[in-house]
Length: 323
Ligand code: DGY
Image 1 (cartoon, rainbow, N blue to C red):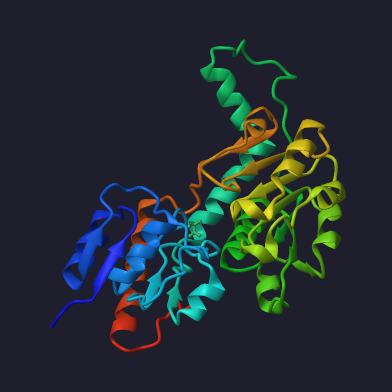
Image 2 (image 1 turned 135 degrees about the vertical axis):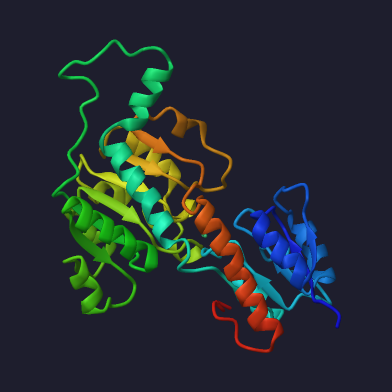
């Protein structure tokens, strides 16, 4: 029997690549470089399945293809705002993602960011490594206590819920949630959380605000200058979701003029390009998109893609179909 042909756009954990190669006629992008719209267009004409990541551009230009061979785009990752939904629909392509398996690790990174920015850990590390530490003193790099404070969570999907659990059970934080739909009361009760109706209502109440909503056009610049102004002047903003959710220029202004306490980001608009102005902000912690970067999560993401491909090529509805 002829195996379906599959293009993997970046290098994956070895165990998953091996399994893929057993089941499919697999082509690896051995250069491990992001694929351009032209590369993607070409791939869509040649392979039964394309397995991209957040770094590949599957915009309307890339998906403007006649006679596509690809039937399924099985994304390695939970966020899929890099895939143009109307174009994928028009081409009749199935799109899947990899939920669940990275929720705990991504929430761990959001919590890491929160602790780092509250306790000025990034500043401390920079000072020590640059040889500028002069020793302990009562007024040195004094941060903010986390325990007992109020955490606002915008987007209460799987990752937002994991963040709430960590903050509530580990740090006794009070949790306030904003979500586009009503959250089941049992889920809120697990973390003694309350749900508010809008982002505007959440922001002024919180000492920390953590973003866990999807990216894409609907949430672009959700946190803009007006909303940054609604935050407490000593509050912290955390983003392990997608860069476009924050108006980066507005955030830079808010940090430079100390309109908020600080921010901590794992994701950036147009990453890996980083605005030089962000680099100037001391009250900012930055990580290079590490949310799901554990051995366990990255393997599980790959095997979840395999599950989806298995479903699809066996004629079943893929378990994680999003389009
Ligand atoms: C995700 O799974 O969405 C990660 O951010 C990597 O794409």
